[in-house]
Length: 312
Image (tube, rainbow, N blue to C red):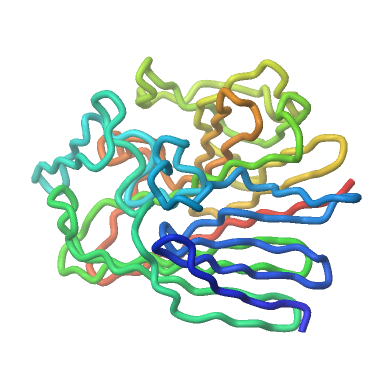
């Protein structure tokens, strides 16, 4: 077999390593949060990890402080204004993690996913993880489940499929996203990013969308990141949703399906990586309704995004 799957304990959770022996490459998945924490590929006389992931050797304790690296953002992402929203004329308050007066990045980023199954085929291997949410937080008193299918293909492509299922008798608001930090083996100042979009979300000084989308063409032909600081959201061009990050040696192509029409970019101060975040809706969508999805009773919503690395 070209692929193998190895499961080991890390702290209080599991690490799932999928190895492509033909390419001598592997990815590491973590059951806590269901996230992609590493993607290692050979390069000349060394190996490069294209994911700026987390050091979990001492447990989970620094995940939030280190920027929610690779986190699953659900049922909302980025900022929820004062942690408050209204659904069907009822007011709710979520207070799980705050930065200033606003709540960040949802409720699922640190939950323990169950390993449902692992599969190895000739051209790929994949793992299915699942988490059942049972009205855990008073501010989101609904019943739903998340199923994640992480696929590592022989063309050095990582795909993640998400299935969200409403097990409740009532509807509820929903947003989904991922928060991976990518690196191409060097400072991002040497990288160029390119994608097509319909405009940039206008944010206020607390990074809450105003509801306006402003014209912006700076990425269509590629923009070198040298000296560029980003914490911005964009509405992708639906017929060309790919985002390309590249330098002299590598090219990363991020390809969401139509259910992830928003793209958030964030450059951390250390400049070692860039967060390229596929989102189903705008930040604060529970209030501004920009891209908001309503999960109807007993409905299912399927999402997918993929990442592929090429050597130049």
